[in-house]
Length: 336
Image (tube, rainbow, N blue to C red; front, side):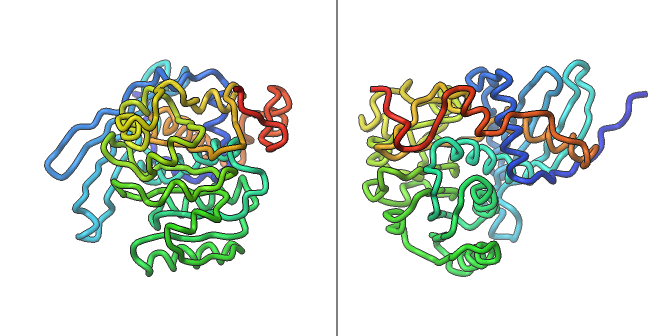
């Protein structure tokens, strides 16, 4: 009789999760070929099904999005992740899908920010106060020398709670308005907004903007002005063209003329993407199944043996040297 699947904890530090994302891409995964997310309407909201496969492992996340839940004190998003053995499809473990998503999404952002943000980025402006906001703060602190946080949110109480958390980490943290983006090195949007959160014309040329809150073609957190003037990066063009309202709406407006212009995350990690420093860099994330699988595998292995070393991965600096990649403003130039 085969062993029953076990419950595995999601207990990785942000850098380990980011390294797991990078490792899968450096090993050759093509994010353009990963199965699309299935969205099934149900009476309470939507059921999301996200399968992915690697040679050694297969996994699927089942997530529920119930918009009415917060009004009765329950999470808006629920979920479970099933990890299976790749060659036999034998179930290996269950993981908390919400905890996995809360770790995976900031990890993906950290992978992009490692390559897009200026090295001395100090001021983060963060829209939102939910689990993703906390996760992004932790993840970005691990990859950039942040000293200052501005929280922009609708309600002051959770905004002050997030600012207090940032202060406990040693940052100067205040509550602000959307105009705070004019002084930001990094802007992260992790909200349920359906319309732009700030004036994209205020973003400085050296800044990096990350939008992760939406995976719907009719919703967006950034405006067309920002998209028009930015170098744009996505997890996968196929996914962005299905789900990224932040790009699809400007495309429909004629503000974003070329669908194929964006570089994907694999190209960015492998040093194939140009990273200009004379205009903002915009990374639009919708969340993909391969990312869940990469982090779930790392979490599963860590849960089995917390003392085991991670598989060897070149450090960011070693990988940069190997592929001739640099993010310093005086070294990176637009391909044009």
